[in-house]
Length: 608
Ligand code: AGP
Image 1 (cartoon, rainbow, N blue to C red):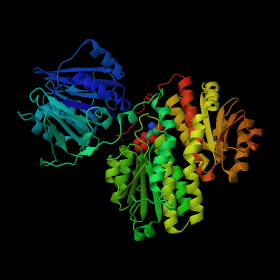
Image 2 (cartoon, rainbow, N blue to C red; image 1 turned 45 degrees about the horizontal axis):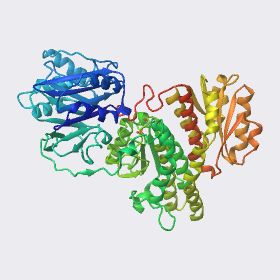
Image 3 (cartoon, rainbow, N blue to C red; image 1 turned 90 degrees about the vertical axis):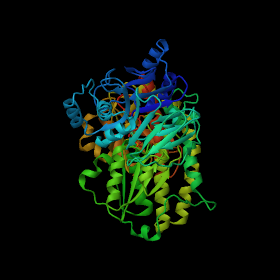
């Protein structure tokens, strides 16, 4: 979850690296550094803190050179400080390495390298890579790196330069993303495309265990056996503007505003001229479909809350037993998954380590694996049997918004598709839901355009110690996402609890003025939910209800009501979540938090 960028060519590399790292800063931002080769030496500059610290330094102290690597870090091994920041070097300082991922056997390697006379300066796992390459170096950098990676266990994407091979930039990856950018008389490496998109749209995706050797005018890629690999060039079609703020103060706000479009883009291409859902990407034969006796959904964080809504939709429309598992826990209970299981992995980034590991476990047990992801070419998309892409566009803010909404949409569509094929939902009922799905972008716009009510509420309620979210049925699923959104960007403690569960313990925490968001959008559950609202109100809670427009009854019981446009009960999460995203955003702003880069978090979690 750190960022890597590297360059070989004729331009001054230092500003180019910093510029590229700016596009990756959302991946990690506790320190940043660069290594630049010039006239027989490698200069390293690296600093704790945001990239701007490095940038300010380089404003005053220029570093010349046209070969270099850069890194922005999210600490795993060793506290964030200048020394632990990347790049790392061997003792002579003539080999420099940047690394994303974790070297799991680094302690063993470190002890062995120390016994071989290497002196370690940092607490990182990455430093072993530089010493290992040094250990194997016998006048051939490529061979030395090849030998080094054979010793390394874990996940890595690395970029290497050496004083002894000033005509080469070398990259290797395993279980951590890395792309090679193709230029004219210059070439690039990066952990994510936005870092180099300003310079080239033509990239190679490196596969596991592949090594790329870049020079100014050439790129060669080899597999782990050292055989040359011919790769297809991938043309990037989206624009850098799509990954930039476009006039908004924060990516998160921009991405909240992009939700109507994200819904349209994900839905429309999958509706045929008869207004039926057609999921060409899911190739399940009739026999396979008939065989499915269970759906297992696995994901982390926000994606797992989309999975909760998905579980509900699958059981409702397709009448198949469905379960949702947290990816980080899935493997530890020897799960019942076999060739009759439809396994659905949900991941915005497509790179989340736990989700990937769960997917592999399910695959090894014979399950049919479907991925829902937002990133084309991501690891999860490549390992799944089938992929449903959420066309939300690049999501930069750490707090997921538009990806989440399209993940829910994907789950509704998959559930309806399965339901129609199995005959568990009638054409008429399905049509009614599709018609309503088509209206959601407009209704989402309506909420976003009228956000002053929620902003006013946030301005009054930003100082709470603790905020609770509650609901019943599908409201409970989405309440969990509302709560997560608030805590991750505003640092307020928050908990989401099923409304009926409140009185079994959590109600003890309610005192005078405690803010409780009560989602009450389900007609059938209205009376029961009303009783739950009364229970917390009786203990002093300040209750903000989220209800469907037209439901005035609730005004008698709640302290404040936030309305969403009327829609089918089953689809209300697609709208109620927007109110909760906006609340979290405005509270974070009122508290002066760094909305797009919340502390301790990273966008893509590629370690277990
Ligand atoms: C979202 O706001 C969170 N930052 C986080 O929970 C995220 O959804 C989770 O880490 C899963 O990421 P993924 O969708 O890329 O797999």
